[in-house]
Image 1 (cartoon, rainbow, N blue to C red):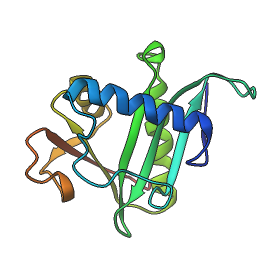
Image 2: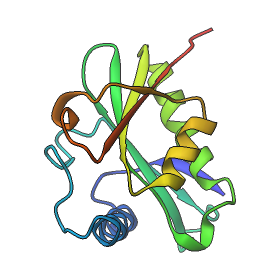
Image 3: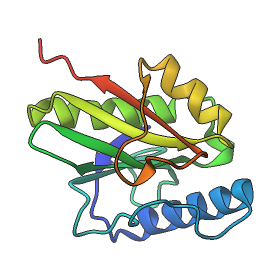
Length: 155
């Protein structure tokens, strides 16, 4: 497996984000469960895709991006792993790449929002060292939003 930064509009990245939105819609029973503006190429600082290998036709296994919020922090957006690759370390590899990118930018922390209908995501983020925080920004007051943070150590 290889994780690499890719353009937002890479076909494999688009397909993964579309699959993520379908799964979220099924879990929450609505096509529009995002409390804030959806991420776009204009506001995503970095986007990563995990591929099964380095070959040009390699299967895209998962993705994740970062939306910079301030000079010192960014939000994890569009984390997703295809169902057949779950439990194989893909999500950890993507999150590691996002955290490494954040450290390289000198950011102090990453934040994220997941939801009450995503207990698997909650377990994953908590296992990876993310701790609950009060809902922030567009998520404040949303009963289905669960927000987390992780300081990025630069040592």
